[in-house]
Length: 480
Ligand code: NAD
Image (cartoon, rainbow, N blue to C red):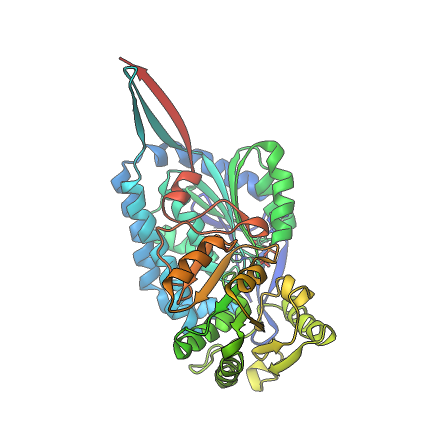
């Protein structure tokens, strides 16, 4: 059994209570490792290590801080095959996806914020009354970074990199469902010489160690990505303690497909947007609205392509969809497929679990599922499923399209498919999401603000937004 340890003060150590949780491989349904079931005592150790590390980390010249972050990126790149394999086994995602997207992006996160550390500049404001203001942007101190299971190392480093770049010490917790690559990050820190205690990685359950990180008085900010209900629970705990809080939460993302789109390209991109990572990306399209005049044509082409997707052992080359991350999540997705039928939906393809043989006979596989005939107010069109299931609905006008898109409590990402840029600009202005892609999906520029509105969260990550979040602005006014 692969037994993981916490990474505190630059060393791997067992949880203080010596308790462990099983780690299951979703493609086989078998336990293959043990994860520390850490608690508040381990948070105390991590806080002590971070406090010790803080003075010299904050005094380190920016160039050196930037160099060590860049070295982390290079070491991730050097271990891409090892990390991608670990990610695929731990999460169930196709190895090809982990190799081409997840791990390269984790390296890019460190590269990007290595540069940001050097280039982040503070503002100054001159006044007509012979005074000048300048704003210091000082590190917050110790910050907590808590991430989910869907893009494990990718989202873990998306928080850690800016927190470190801004000069903070970090206590980070990956999801207990996918802890493996986060645990491996400790070795990478040791290899490149990140000073001990600057990054501490704790494993365990959210309700235990996650809660203890959020509640520790010396943790000045929490950057959280995960479910909306968890975000609400954390906000309730943290708000009266006046910590900075960034919440990246769930989504129920609309795609608006107009008759004047490039149909072939739109269908191909929307198949990817719907089913990449088994539909377990917070940005995946889940409500597809199609202009009525091309509804049948789109439906036929879309369903045809979805039927071509191979649900297979994630470690095999031709696997398009791997396993759903856990038994609990697998049951949840299947329960929504059953609900869709009860709510009057017609399954156009998929709608069932997939049984594989040999190594994967007990794995959690679900066929990519396309459903039509559900109205917008059904639970299947209102609630986040976070799996390989999308719905199709026709619309008759731009006004109706935007009304349908906005008729939801979430507000993370929308896609608009049209060759009429005038329309795209108008709809982008009107759609209630933090991110809009026109004629593309998940085309990411790390400088841009990233995040959602309404039940999809509060605050933005990415570029300077992240550097601002992880620093305290202090204004100094000088009269001359
Ligand atoms: P989750 O909320 O169950 O868990 C996320 C993390 O929070 C885990 O590390 C968990 O251990 C921890 N946690 C749980 N309870 C906690 C508590 N009380 N205090 C502190 N930490 C706690 O989410 P999940 O199931 O791992 O992830 C799926 C969700 O994440 C989906 O809703 C998805 O939309 C969302 N997500 C959002 C984004 C985004 O950028 N907006 C990105 C990826 C995933």
